[in-house]
Length: 251
Image (cartoon, rainbow, N blue to C red; front, top):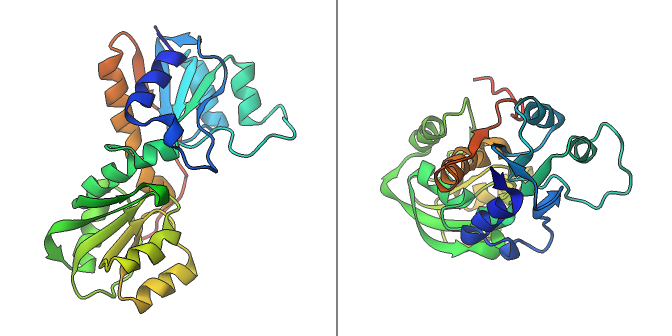
């Protein structure tokens, strides 16, 4: 069996929890550091489905990327996820922005999938800038992203004649387009971007690739499972089989 404290310490070794952004909430957010389990579920988020999956598999620990508690709780109802986790004796560890910016973390993993060789890191903004091995076109780059991430679709613009210098900002990173433009990027890869941010990118001839929040970050979960499994061979770590954002992309 492995304890929540041991898992916390392992993650803290490569994605220190004290590097989180000021608005964030990370660490052991529900339960106790002494909780031990021989089965651990790893998921991008905790939903009621993930809690029930953990119960079926007798997993007493869940590791997530997105915080199970983000805003302060004023009311705790019986059907809500924090209540369900506590009721079933499940400890939840969340590693969010500290994992986004860690070397080998979410942003790095997304960059690898995009074929981007990282050159500059902007940890306070959760963004990196790098280059492709060879210049390419928007359509070809979109197809490569779709294939490498194994996703059913994405949104993109085709305003840059050729793409070589690329900014990567996982999750809801659309607001980083303004910083990316200052560094003369050709393309911007993210999980969420707003309308006015797309228009700004268009004006600056930056092609935008909007993968969807889930698609831009769920790639870290199998990587976490593998790392945890290697370090704690006596414990079974499994990616959640029930969690997805349930979005359907119609091509």
